[in-house]
Image (cartoon, rainbow, N blue to C red; front, side, top):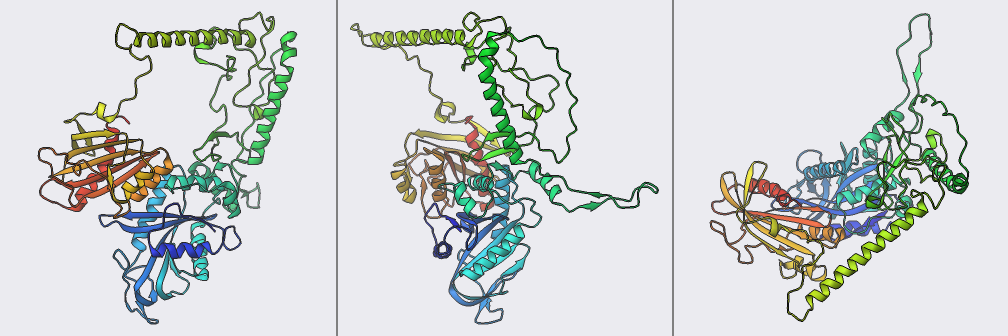
Length: 597
């Protein structure tokens, strides 16, 4: 069991749960899985909906850890209605959960939906997501004893046997109708998509937990659909017409969409062909090749479902995680792909003109071994390595001379600027020749500007920009910035109406040095009682018709890369429903797009 707890655990229930899992050690000797601490809170009371996410090779589950401290006895769990606790086999008293409520199932359902939506937005298909509730504290027993409530809801106590049973049943539910196991690349991509702070588990660690190795992200809808067809059992078609056959015709499922071994062989053959072409290049340049009659183009062979398709690898955001596409290299192309132009390794202004003929490839490869990009071919016949201006050596000299001229010109401009700025006549320094810095929201927005989001008009009332967050936050968030300062802070106040009543919107955008610090900041700011970035009202900024402070504010946050957006909304006069402020806060998250960022 691999455990990821990137931020300090906040409750005694979490600490007891992860301490039990830590005693199992890593690897698949007890149970192969990954459990990551991922608190999810909702609503004005910031109630916990889930505490962790569980990855097993069969699928995903969201986990809620509940501490039973004011009551003791046997917990009777039910898929519907309140849970109870009593001294024996009976309904007993209504269970009282920390944060309110008597059953965690509704919150876990929303947490599962949130995880599914997040993973699908990242291009991953999660399949069925199970829900696991873990009881800690004074719970002495559980009814039903196996903890299976049906429809993906499992309950367990904090002991090895009960937890193993709950995780096993959750795995079985998540693996139903799942055509493909979760691979190492799938888990790494999912951990990053869900926003688990800290490091991403390595491929070796995930492989040791029982996840099959793959450099490809395979849990994509377009790949899982053919995989589901392949995993389906053989089916019998209708009987043929009389006289043709008397036995039913069975249709066997096709092979896998992409065979990694075949893809590796294709890549190795392409590399070998490229190296051979480079070896024969000098001989081809010295002696012109004899004229060869064009070979007839063979008709393309029909592609069956079992035939491996060419693959295209594109670097993912998880280091060695690669997305996989099944589109052939020349799909839909009716004309031959032109050979890439030889520019000596530098394109752009130093490339050849449009009239320059591309040299022919040194060797025609079979279609299944043809690489997507061909290496530079040798010069065409009749030209020498030094005489033809299109030759790589000649062009390399021209490129070097052009680069030298650019460097000398730049040095001359720099010397002129220095002497101009330090002259004895007292003239001001000449303007810098460097490109202007990118504009900030303070430069592109002005007080009085408006923005319409989801039918609500927001009017800018105040805006400030800083290059540090130290001194611009309070409580635990201020302590966080003392050790991990931001690189930019942009704050603004907007006025708007919610349900016909005037409201104020505090918008803060924090840019951290990296994604890890941004994730840690958002997790801390989302925690109730941890403090926040200081809004402008808190620092004494006022505007006509606005309040002096945020009273009964609603909160929303978002993260994109190293940038964290924090929004707080409050009534500017008469108070209305909290749900109206909550919707206004969610809409105000889009104000960050007003300045074009």
